[in-house]
Image (cartoon, rainbow, N blue to C red; front, top):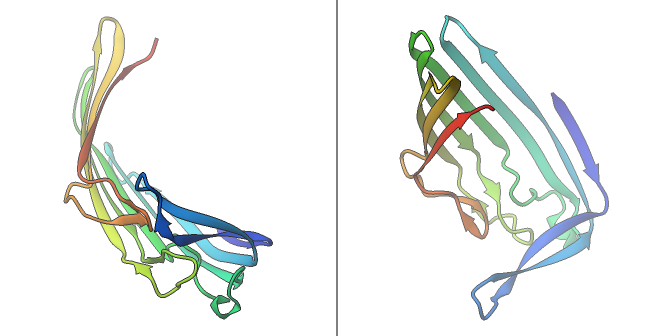
Length: 182
């Protein structure tokens, strides 16, 4: 898909130079100006052999202030927290299947390109980052029900990255789920 979005007026988030007594970073929203975003997104799915599924996606986004609400010198600057490129690749493989039992392995890589992180300084850039996720799952029947148990380890390499100008991305962590339907 392709897109072209024009917004007028548009909000901009400007980080003030202060921190509240409780440690919260203070922000100011200023309404006005205009923004334009153009780009494309593509997704691919392939199942080349039984038990193997491959998924990939990529996107580009050229998001700029066409009229900066506070400083005309910043017209044409990139929007805050709008990476120019994103990409991901995922694989799911059924390792073993016996009757009602199944073991599945999953792996994924996510890449987020660099991006501006404050609206009044387009030269302040957050670097690109890449994270890797790994998982294992098991499906089985018990008590006359179909069950699944999954464990997903996100950010396996414990990549340290910013997702915005005021928050870090999640460190390595695991998510475990067990589910059935009634």
